[in-house]
Image (cartoon, rainbow, N blue to C red; front, top):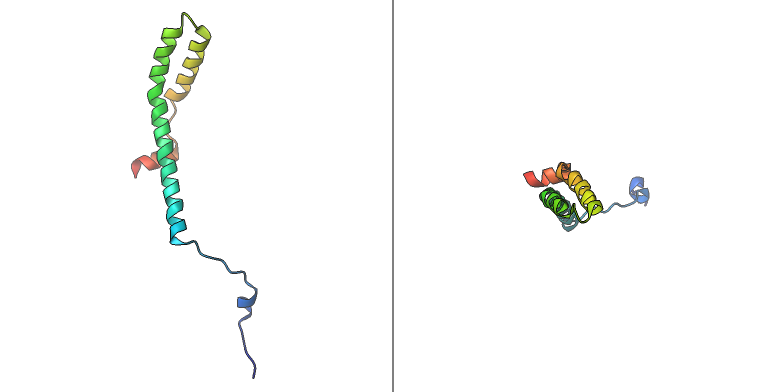
Amino acid sequence: MTTLSHPSRLYLPRRRAASLRQVLMQRAERTLRGIWQALEAAGQRRAAPELLAQADILQSSHPALAESLRDVASRYAARPLTPAATAARTR
């Protein structure tokens, strides 16, 4: 009596499918990362006018600091939302 077995079952490595918990955790992580990025971008845009106002106050006493505040404010004022942040806002 001979026993036949399919050879592919013997040589192929077994791949474990991701569990539902892993899939849900990955989705939650991506969603939360997008929300965090959107909040950071919104905070930076809101901070820009405050930085400019503080730079105006400090111009006479600390001109170098005022200039660096203006540089930072100009970088954050015009920064568009990242694609991930935009996607998080529309969900």
